[in-house]
Image (cartoon, rainbow, N blue to C red; front, side, top):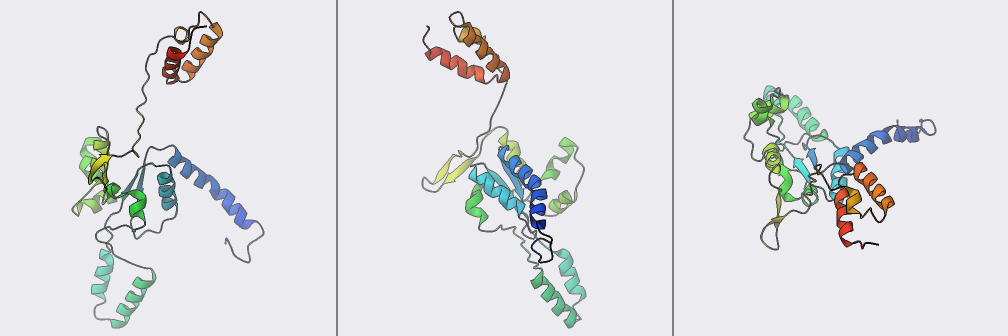
Amino acid sequence: MVGSSNASPGASGNDCSKFWETLHIDLRMVDTSDFTIAYCPTNIYSVGTPHDIALCRQQRKPVLFVSPPVTFPALDQLRRRLAGDPVALKLLDQLEAEVPIKPNPRGIPSSWYMPLVGGDHFFDSFGFHRYREQFGWAESPLDEQEQGRKLENPLLPFLEKLNHDLPKKWNHRMRKYVPNDDWLLWDLQRVERPNPRRIMNTEDDPALGQEGERICRLCPAAAGALERCAKVLPRR
């Protein structure tokens, strides 16, 4: 056990080294993402997800936070079954306090997340079942759970709209919605550019044209930068 007085020397370090790869991969996925979707029911203990959320917001990337209602139907059924046994009910109350078991029927997340994520990016569900037929998805336990209640603000319609319009954010000072500068999505497309030799005046400096051609082959997007440079570079 990590931190145990009976642990062999270096055991904690070995455990840290082994899990470092998982931690590193997880955080690198945040680095390379445009935005992050976090599923955070309040009855599930979580450590890695808050780390991901904090890193994502430090990089000024949007976090789409799904906090579903949390209820315990089986607990209510058990309480009814034990209605005639006061000792059992007392033990059940004690267990409920120790676990703890805290219903959250409105799915209200921790207040800590509110300023961190932003009020416009909270959702109460995914809404996958609305798209099952369109994409041929198999039904999942999550679908069954969501179909049994009214979805106030599902995530998937928001993502579908994201294909056409970037979200805005509420500006409290201006009292209106304004462009959200956290949403920076790259639309990278291959564009045919003029020959870099012609762009860089290669008749005057063949070596310059050769290097420009290499850069453009490696990174087509760089051709645009070379073209802009050529317009301001004087001919020798």
